[in-house]
Image (cartoon, rainbow, N blue to C red; front, side, top):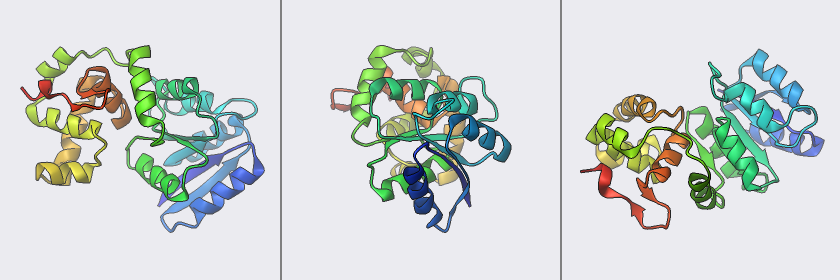
Length: 230
């Protein structure tokens, strides 16, 4: 069962999202909050599998709550999915910098929201499909999220880990990576557990950002760069 906290200052939005999530057999909304401060208090007490947060809320906003739940230096962290009507780039950049696992717009299809909740609970990252390319392309030019260089990765990653990183950056799930490489799912998870610390990242989403920053995936749409395979 995936335990979720829903935080939104708009009663109708909060009730609608709660109803959507509660209709699923594998999702349990354990609490709702109307303010950021209330969301932080409830999340700290209940330790949900996912905190689903709006950005603009009274008291603490969703980014501030995310920083307290999953930001740099927070351990153990609580995965955060930001669900908002605002697609302003600065919000998304700040969310990424504070360790959120996902960012979706409220007008996303219900199936996409449910899929995002499950992905975040399983340790995956997710960005709204309409935002992904624009945000990553802009983000890698604005900031260097991680200090690990391509050359250091070449020295640290095994050839199999490089393969997995490129497939991860192409948007594949663990199961899809396992099928592509003809290996067991547990093998992929084991490689990922070793890969992320080598890049200096904590999540799959940050690994994807790192891959774009270092041209493992070219942001002009030309696809994977082969220099990590050599």
